[in-house]
Length: 231
Image 1: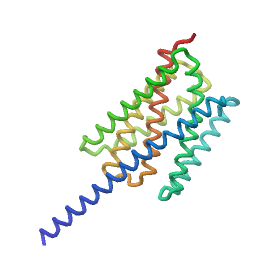
Image 2: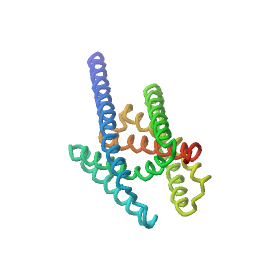
Image 3: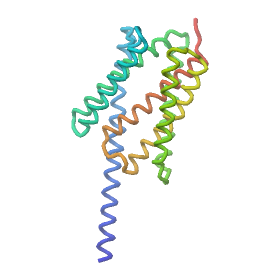
């Protein structure tokens, strides 16, 4: 009887391990695919001079939040079907459009291309480091979630306030804080997958995508503010 129970435990544990690896593998694959519509959206946005904030910053912010949360709701609703994947890719296209305003401004600098490449390389290093750390850390880090969420709320309030305050020092502080918080979120979200806390790869990809996106944007803002060169 004891042997049978032990055998069942081994089989159950092996099955869980396989499921987690499949979710992680699918998450990495969909994350890589999501970069295609992001780049396409960014390219199109730069070409068109797209900006959701060209009029009233408040109206632009409300429109962005409404569209983003609409995508979040729809992706969560259809996360177990191909519709969820399509919606996720649509969302990443939209985020590429939103990124185009920043990219357009950076490309106007004499070293803009170098700054973008450096931010991309830095983001890749952060992701690789956090993914490696997530696979080696054995302890449960789920308690990090509430502290990271509180940090995001503080950062969000400061970011909204700075739309009107336009304080360079506050922008730098928010960007630096964002790099740290979302780097930690990459670790947290990947560890959730590895520990079985997140079992849907569409939701997992959305979480990790937002982490990576915010690290890239924040790094680019920091690099531009500290090393941007005008003609």
